[in-house]
Image 1 (cartoon, rainbow, N blue to C red):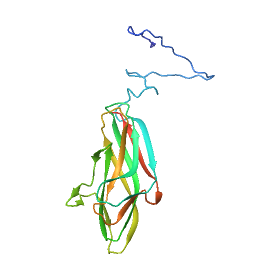
Image 2 (cartoon, rainbow, N blue to C red):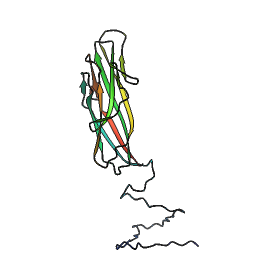
Image 3 (cartoon, rainbow, N blue to C red):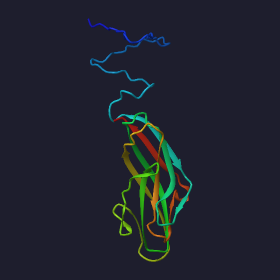
Amino acid sequence: MSLVKISGNASGTGTLTIAAPNTNSNYTLTLPTNTGTILTNATTTGFPAGSVLQVVQNTYSTTTTISNATYTDTGLTATITPTSASSKILVLSTQLLGYSATLFYKFGGYRLLRGSTAIYEPSPLSGGRPYYPGIYLGGSSTNDLSFSFFVTLSYMDSPATTSSTTYKTQFDTFDSVGSINAQAGSRPSVMILMEIAA
């Protein structure tokens, strides 16, 4: 017959109490056949790599017009405080963009920032135009163009901090003709931050 042994800690002075729940039913707690640490809701320490430690979501629905040839805040942000400096932060965002211009084509770009530092830019400038996969807003004539579409972003960051950390998105029109509206029609954009155990 196997035995259960509870060993004290020579360095501790407190008393560990195992209390029964208030129940009229019978339950069996089966211990694993290997060593390890019991995980509780009081700490995130001990979870295996890849575990989701916390999730933060923020939405923003105020229309932000971007009409100059420079990266501009879209208004969408989310803030998370990592529980460990070794954790990674998975950033997911979806934004509805509206476009309006009297030009038959237009280029745009987007990027993700941690604080004031750009950490992901899938569409860097090249001779005034972005590399793929920058946003290309195209048409077939010089008539007024007006349409909307979704832009999604996903990026795994390593902030290496346990301080409050804010992420935000920016868009750029790359020229001064026409404009891009983030949260077009006041439709909500969303950003989700997930802390992943390293």
